[in-house]
Image (cartoon, rainbow, N blue to C red; front, side, top):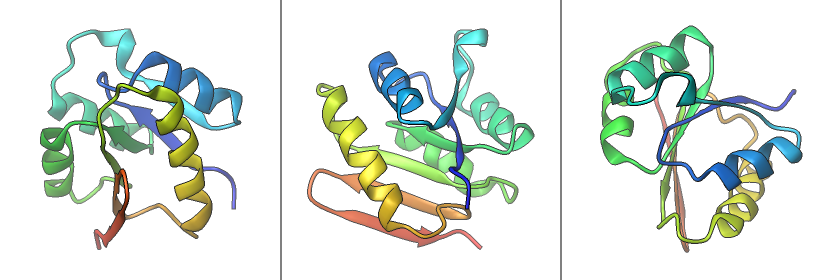
Length: 117
């Protein structure tokens, strides 16, 4: 299976996006439209067939209400250490056979996976 495609919400540190790209992940960013609402981020992810990566619970909640969302990764940790996020996210993805159609909540010590459909 090829690596999943992601859409990083505006709250994901730039260094995380760069480092994920260097690891071969296709990560699109919200920046071409500054100030996008959470609803717009979710709609963009649906249009571009991307899994949303966010630190914001609101974006995750909105995405859960949309039947066409491909997946959500909610980082339940402070963005203070981007290197930790970059290390933890790929390790988590390697352990999950298929991240599509799932809400994946990554906390400092736990990972919770909820199937969306």
